[in-house]
Length: 618
Ligand code: SF4
Ligand code: SF4
Image (cartoon, rainbow, N blue to C red; front, side):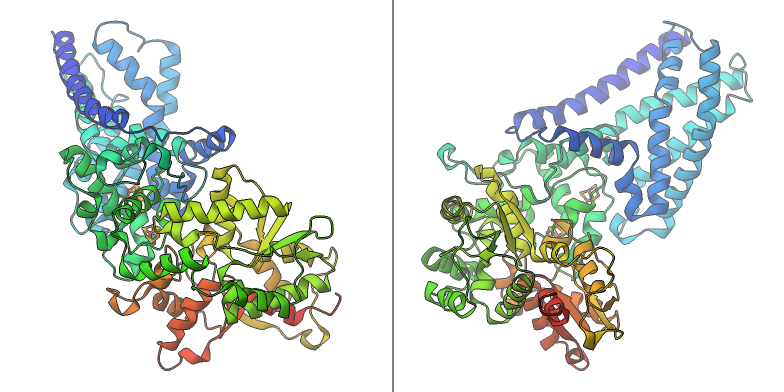
């Protein structure tokens, strides 16, 4: 009788599970295929660390992360136990009295205690502590699931006390089994579906942060206009979100009080997919305004513990808007400059030429030069940043590096790419790739982190591969002298500066370059006061994704650059070292509007700092 009842219940709950999973699988399978398994070794390593060892979950929030990891490891460990008990309950095979099952059960006991501890902690955190990223209202569903998990562990531990043949033992067995069945029916329609999907999502996440495959215009691809245009990875992402809010609390736009919330973007995508609203544009689903508030800093994607990629959705939707002529007015001027003059400022190439001549730069020739220096729009035209480049040239000359520049350069296309103007990006990229191929450098050095990303990652998608490094990496290696801890000039020997370093998003987070700038500063006489949000998870300056050109007066909330400037000021160091032309512009702008005390801060570019301390011909 009990066996028949269990068969009926199992089939009913499995049916409910399958029907809900089928809806989601149909949506994923119906989307254009954007799954990729390139760089398999990297993916397997990341899977082992982030799924099996739960590195990403534990790293940012160690205590709740560990509690979650206990639950996850318990879920895996109990898989065999559930299978054996279910086979027994169905009357198919009874392995519950074998010696190995007894040993396995014993082994599960510490897991059960750890899961119970973990889930009680998570329950209290969710019900009473309620961190902001988890949302304003308490999720009843989460509390029910937590109660289910706790009951599963308690009923397991009770099997030591209760003989299965007794009434109490049978009731205990049935409570355990029915909760597992209820779980099955609940999971696909809830955020707990991540238990099933997240291992796949993490494995399929691109190894490249902010990966934006090129649009193929011959196939008439124009970007994302409706949810029907989303690729299969984005659809999978939408069903994997565990609503933890890590993306939200790390988003600089959300942190500065803007409407953009990356978690909401993923949840709105999920709702729109399930609601099947084919005619609704992404601009309507997310609101166009919100789409233009993203700086493309990559924090959301980088912090997500379940492998969700926000930027293909955000920038994909921008591409859709741009292709329909719906870019914000502020970008119109930049696009015009890029189209007519090939740089973001709209200045004539003669001005770049003047700088090249005054800095006595040679045209790159692979037979006589070791490296090609890429100037970038800022380096070629922006007076402040040119000072920093001159410092870098002096360092290279002091260290006898033979370098040259291209006779002509266009903008790499970073702004066009990140704002969704893919057509313009591809035009700029193709022109530059042609010139770079003709020049034939083996190695490129640049002081612009955006150029590192665009030439290093985006140009590779056109088949152009070259080694490109940020000047901090190149100069750090150049000035590394084994056995000598310092290369400071005699004048500064013994007197150390108190500075703070602002990691640019495209250097710290995208390129993972965090140690080299610090090694340089320490080597050349600085003590670093670290700001909150640093290294691989810096707080953005607010310039990326075309927002350098946004109308600052129109911005809702606080300016992102103002928030960052305050964080840097709070370190107590009155010197802020920067390593990106756009960070410098934004933070100096924030200083200008900071009011009393703001002007006590001075800015210095990393290369200028190092050059000021480097011995002539050191
Ligand atoms: S890329 Fe940065 S600004 Fe854009 S949504 Fe993600 S965290 Fe927010
Ligand atoms: S997208 Fe990722 S980080 Fe953001 S709420 Fe969902 S699971 Fe958490």
